[in-house]
Image (tube, rainbow, N blue to C red; front, top):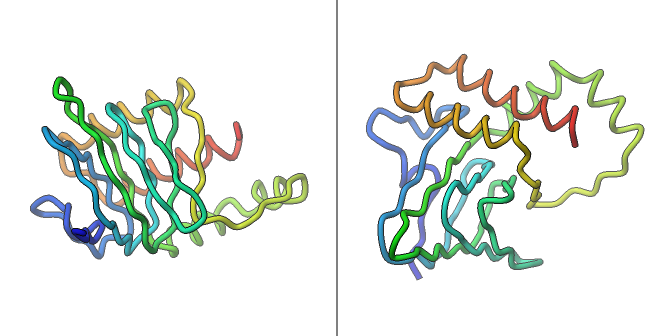
Length: 169
């Protein structure tokens, strides 16, 4: 079984796998992939078109373009099934724990308020249904990737997503 190290093995030219936040549009043209993906960073996976299956120790998840997924760093076995008519497309955001800690520090009052109202169990995988905001957010990421976004812009887009989720989810 082929092992892919993410984000290292998919970084385009000019991308530094050591960056705190990496935003990458993944496009596969034909065939299918079945293998083991090793995430060296946490990831947010947003399928734009196509389907994939991810296997974790505790469950198997079938992914379409209706949801997006938070994955913790570590192992995941994934397969991507591709239609002969369509390319598989997804937008991936890779981020370090330090980025999440920094976000937590900046928005600790909002997070603390929510934590007092909710009971949350740690999990290596979270699935969230896409709403109109998220669909437009993904489009904005794709447009932004036409250039070379700065570290500040990537941070802003990461914060935008998490703040939306804090307020809506």
